[in-house]
Length: 389
Image 1 (cartoon, rainbow, N blue to C red):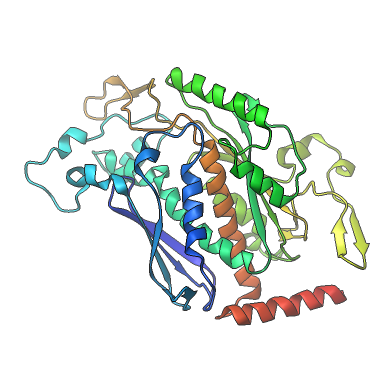
Image 2: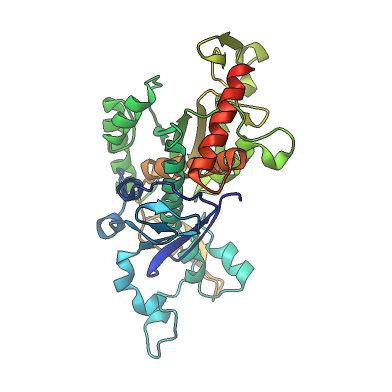
């Protein structure tokens, strides 16, 4: 069975819920590691006041017993601590005489889903759109990705992320080993290696915030330890790089994705783009470079997978842009909801976990079985096949 998941819940509702189907039995789940990923998502310079309220942790309410998956669907719940302040506004049942009308949203924010969602679903209170379209939903997706990471880690796969750019400030390139990259970016407020760049980014975010504006950036995910052949060339919807690209574009506020050198390939000659194939008895086939980011023909080629995504500035501004009141059709400044000046470091964590999910899904498609033992046997047999090729 292929891996799949669904999430439910609103940004100011009581909880976010995720259900994962297709995990094998007997996979050990480290609950501290699961919650560590959620805590990483909440860090980062430029985050707003909500991060002082929410202390995310996931509770597993199905599919796990005594620390191991059972093969049944795994159900995860992430409680919203802020729910206590929104009970009347977000209550499922009608509350006579409540102040819910005072919090009605009728002025859509440029760059958000507010107006499109209101038109599509015929909703005159745009809160019914923004509550679900909010990036708060990514907490559930990170929880799902955190489970996927543990499946991949059982087979030696490592995942790192780093911020490449925030607005006008770009981090210098580095070629650190993945363990060192993880350690250094985890110690950074903006998930960069270079300390001077970190200071510049912090000062830049402060300036943007003082001006009532927001700023986006570019983030990168690197995955090492993958075997050759995840994904396939035989159908468009089986190409793993295509699945990853679609998943990255589905992250709130992401407007672009590239793999390897990405758009840079449009400026270069073929001899400067394609990775030469090499062979050594001790390591088998490999590439002399990794400009294609670990993919050829929609399949992993054994080199590290490198994925970048660009996040636009958050559309909720404390210096709001002009909008139109959907009741009167008169121009107004857009309504303000609590927000962040910059969420790029957090978006880096979301990227990592979204990519982890797509790779785990392809991993299960390739080596799938009902138990972790069956998957490991399939994996070992395939590795032996590769060694003999």
